[in-house]
Image 1 (cartoon, rainbow, N blue to C red):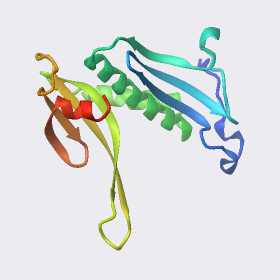
Image 2: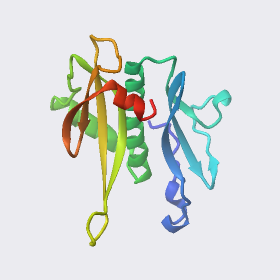
Image 3: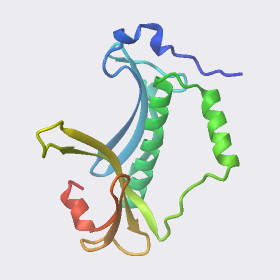
Image 4: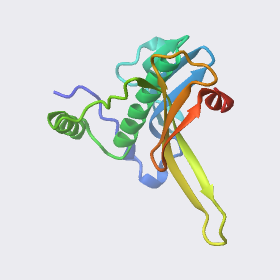
Length: 183
């Protein structure tokens, strides 16, 4: 028996939904902490989810790290990617049964974690590039970029980082380039 309340996001017509309505996953990054959170907003207000403790109000904490090392930050980025995809899935009408069937099918057919040993994820982000070099249309490309660091070496300015851009391929950059980007 499904005890999760069905929150009908589309009880309003689609045209009446406001920006920000629906489920959302949020990655909150601070200097000494990182966390992944899940919310539901309707009409500019957060809606309490069934298992949310009073102390957390309307926010579910999916993961939280204090004084995380780069690899724990990578875990947070990975968790956020999944939570964001799940939020979008439910916002578009997906249901738990569909999700269960899909996960079961993937597992039965051997889909599992990619082994990147001796590297581990330290950062993942959506990159946006704009090509306006022609007089024709401006082209915008969105792609995910994943940064992996060696687990057997200390991270310093020259540590080689494997950067996987899902559109353009793999490159190697020194760790200092990530630091120059606001790390």
